[in-house]
Image 1 (cartoon, rainbow, N blue to C red):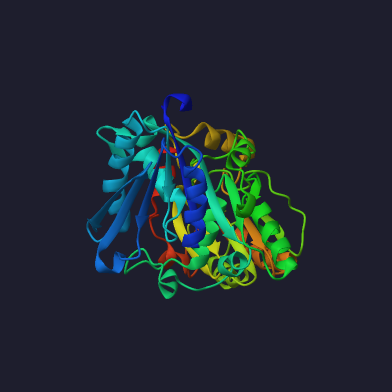
Image 2: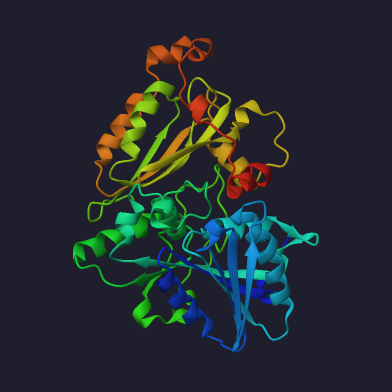
Length: 408
């Protein structure tokens, strides 16, 4: 679909929760080629006033604009302004590279989804730019508490809009998980804190190389990024759950739990077990099914103390026409197909830093149907009280929509 990366303008995205740290890392990126790099920044600090301040620096020239919120939506505003801007910059003969310095409230996944899927003048932006990498800054003193907490963005003054209900943990985890490389910042007073932070990162984004901002050699860091790194590729609910092959061994009290089970969950017991995924856990993500909704795959995702459940489309066992499905999903279904369950399966990956992995597995195992419940059949299952019928929503996040529409 897209031309060779060498024929497109390299694009580097820099993310992180601490604005000053993101700015410093982005400046390091700009200084690789000061006269040939355009540095773009959208400042959301005035979003409560209905405006976004956008700045472009190229060489000694700085161009600033104040943008009114389109439809009251930050995402719409950035899409309508940022994407055409990037196309213009990519076409400029004196620009060799573009660096986007993301506001702390922004997650790079949503930006990369738009670059790949949203068309401007009939074609997506990835026909003009090639994502060189996503860099995420991680504060060694504060990142782990942020990634495992319950504080909302608005409480910290970082909300993208008045109705932004995301937590700090969701953004912190999302920024790090989507990174091709991690830039560590500062020093934890407690050395054990740094060890545990790096152990979490090794499981959250295992293939991403690490470097410290104090002595950052950016070309060397970028050269260490594996060839198969995501570089802006968005995973959908039926994609790989263990990208980068993270270690399943426990390190510094941090463990990755892989829960796999063919039998469906009892909806009420799973609802009761969900608390095990919120306390002492940094991240949970995966697909599952409940007996009361046998045709539907569901997606569960948590970060710190926040959790969301979304509809992830039908199981292939209920679909006659597989045209339009991705090769990866076809292959995965063929390799794991069961005569009774088809492709239905519960697969959850949990990164625990304080919770007992064995207790997590026990709670989830106790939530699946017993032999007697399984034998009762779907007519009986349909009578189960189902808290997830109320939780379930069509995935509104654009990355999820991209999976369900084009990468099923």
